[in-house]
Length: 139
Image 1: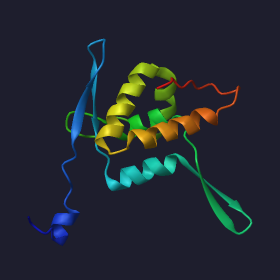
Image 2: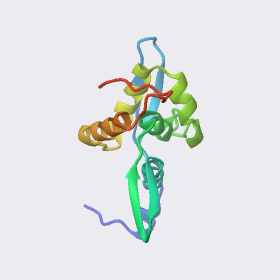
Image 3: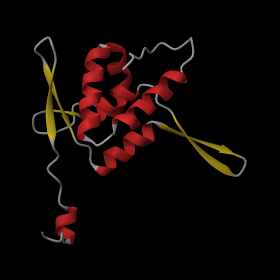
Image 4: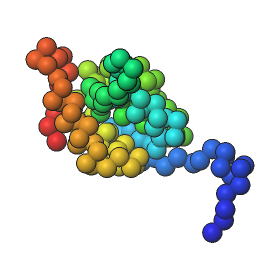
């Protein structure tokens, strides 16, 4: 076992990636997030409100699957395919089946437990109103 040095700690990690195949014979790659990317993803599903002198953080899970997909979809070299702002177009244009398959793979490779993901998705679906244009598939 080797203790990491400063240089070892700051060296870019080789991020794991997995291939996600679809029934139509197409595929994508999904990869691990860096610490910064994970923080940015978690920030994208968090809303901060100030009430008086208190700061309150709420979880906002609208388009959770698409945001997770955007944060992890990559090319064969591991470079990101999409911009963070692409999540809405992805959510509105990709089938729920494909999006769920990508999100499931992204959650697995990034250590997002099934319980965490289920809680996030349930909270998202519970928070939607009848006027919502987005559709979430049941797990």
